[in-house]
Structure formats: C-alpha cells, structure tokens
Image 1 (tube, rainbow, N blue to C red):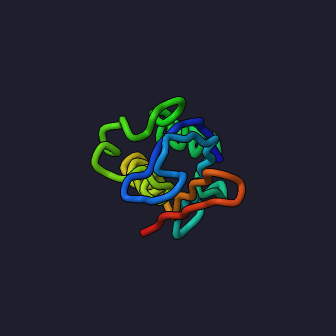
Image 2: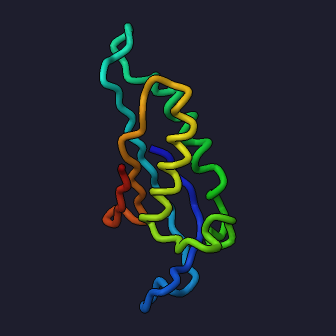
Length: 116
C-alpha cells in the first residue's frame, strides 16, 4: 500500500466533484505468479514497494488534471488505477511476476479497482 496527496476535478460530471478538490489517496497493487520462486515468494516486498512508489511518485502533491495523460483522460479513480496498472505492467515485465490488479482509494469507503 502506498499513499499520495493530490487534487483533481472531474470532467463530464455534475456534482461537487466537478469542482477542484483533493484527497489523501491510497494505492494497492497485487502481484502474482503461476509458480512461486525457490524462496517461496511472488516477489520481495521491498521490490514491490519500490515499483509501486515509482508508479505513484508523479501524483504526490500535484493537480492531477495537469499531468500529461490526464489532460485528455478524466482523472477518475478508475482511470488513475488503470494508469498505475499500465505503468506497473511495463516495469514488472523485467521480472517473473505480473500485476493482477490495482486499487485506488479516494477515501476509506471509496475504492476503484482495475485489472485486465
């Protein structure tokens, strides 16, 4: 689990979230393999945290709508989860594991999960 603080506003949405607002986001990535390595692990937790930290670093203390990808893509939690998922997929290709899913929480009770 990794966190970041950032602001966004939703496009094509009617309600209070169309206005600029922020969250203390939490992100969880789940990695998997078909067969555990010789140590009995999917991957070292330190390596998993390093991958996730790199995938979310550009979000911290940013206005998400201004990030290049989100200038055209609505910065919903679902799209943020997909963006992080795709970023992790690229980084995990050099490893023997794969990314199974990414969940993003705006608040403790509001989560979006993306997987392929």
